[in-house]
Image 1: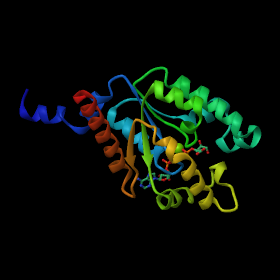
Image 2 (image 1 turned 120 degrees about the horizontal axis):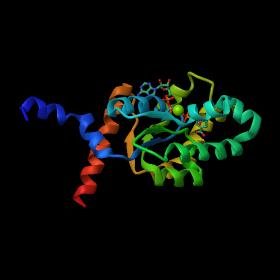
Image 3 (image 1 turned 135 degrees about the vertical axis):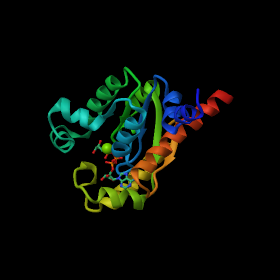
Length: 196
Ligand SMILES: Nc1ncnc2c1ncn2[C@@H]1O[C@H](COP(=O)(O)OP(=O)(O)O)[C@@H](O)[C@H]1O
Ligand SMILES: O=C(O)C1=C[C@@H](OP(=O)(O)O)[C@@H](O)[C@H](O)C1
Ligand SMILES: [Mg+2]
């Protein structure tokens, strides 16, 4: 193989694709962490299908997430979310971006742990707040003080997100850079598991 071909074969996305194999890559983390937008870029880099579980839930129910919460409540939404995510993870490789509460639900977390490699996109409150404040589509943030609600969710959920296989810090940098960081984490994790 020529040196040029070796360089191409050795590129970040090729190495990450090899590290993933036939597993699914599942993005978890709080609202605004970038799961949906970064997940789409990661899938495109890896040249594998991308699915956002919220979009899939909206497609099958023919309702928006906000409408589902309003009509049936959070508990019913979580039951539907668990079923949809279980189904999405039946075959791979895929990149699946989940909604922020998915990994917090015991049943869904079990499906995710069984269904592939989970990556927590971890961000601090100000980064998350800056991003979610731009849209009002998230029913859990329709409160008197949504920033305080987000902080409460952070405190309650971060110990559980910490159970994900990998953690990537979601900084205030371009989405493409975040996607590269996910690919690098995937490669590092593979190296570590090969060494142990
Ligand atoms: N790294 C980033 N830099 C700038 N904006 C981002 C970044 N990641 C996400 N965003 C923006 O923040 C908002 C929330 O991102 P999204 O991917 O929907 O997060 P999540 O699915 O985790 O709630 C979107 O408007 C998105 O374009
Ligand atoms: O944190 C949560 O419980 C939720 C996060 C949302 O997804 P994003 O994290 O993609 O915003 C969406 O699933 C729903 O509004 C509930
Ligand atoms: Mg999302």
